[in-house]
Image 1 (cartoon, rainbow, N blue to C red):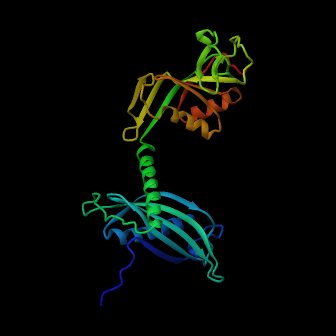
Image 2: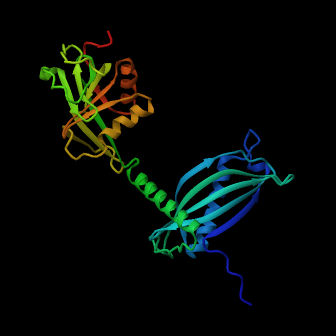
Image 3: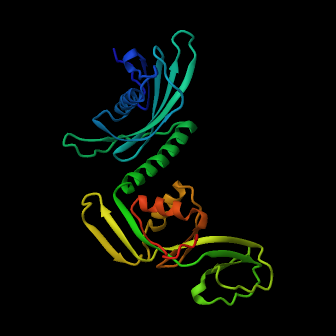
Length: 313
């Protein structure tokens, strides 16, 4: 008699939480849940691939609610999308109170598996067929997440960029005047940049400069200091972290220059205004956050040539 064929793209795995699965707080240990997640996701992936797989990444794991001893946890797994040799498995984790029958959504995770052959090389996986609208939605979402995960794995930690930043002397102000206003007569050494749009004429200038506008500015942002990214760049390869390369100036077409700095400022909750050319970028930051910005940038490896005359004084 022919056996029943199980779903090749979905599976539900169940476990009961025992005392040895818990932490000091009496809840299920997150590491135990993660181990079971990987095991359940792998079973679903094996059923589709019908061959050897390895876990390449846990692309996302979210803990939504605690799991208690005695709960029956259910891992609802689905192969969401399949590339040439890799696939994403999504897992929705629910916990059922074994006394009341109440079911709670406690976690969600996405795992990426890679099929390998007997020599350990990637092998081609069977394609995934989307038969319903829900299947097509899962496939589209999974493909997007796998692309993001692939990009993250290729860039995160593969190289680190450090820059020498130079603090320009003085304090700076951003003015906005009507778009038809004439260009201000500003000495070149006091002018950071001018941008004309349909919204207005924007002028970033040194506050020491006496500006004579025909009309009162509609917008004035005062008390900024300026950092220039025009000194040098260091790259450290993860494969050879001792091999540092120096470049004079930021090369046109360089990738990730601003991200290496603005991501640090964003994490420190420091707003920034940016003026850029092909070879140089100027960052305007609030003067009140000057010390905080310096500490945040230097903490991750950037170097700052500071003004001897502190504009905060």
